[in-house]
Image (tube, rainbow, N blue to C red; front, side, top):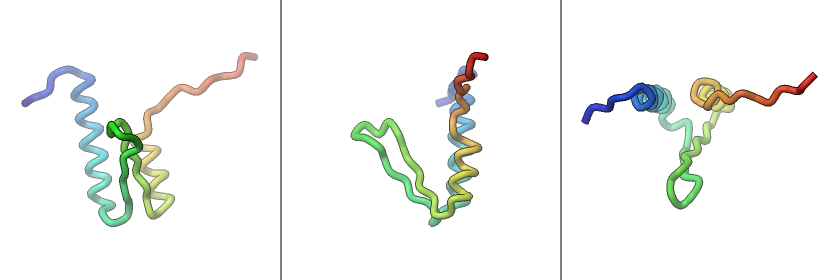
Length: 69
């Protein structure tokens, strides 16, 4: 079934990019579910550089607190 809406389409794009990355690293990472409801999937990469690349590409960008000055 097609998905409509900007947010849903963006999420599908991100999921596709994540899967492409993981497929290129088969045998070099493990994944596990953090809790009983599968709300979070964790990835553990054999090579720390792969983990850093994954984090840089797919970790949500959050605005950090700025010190008032």
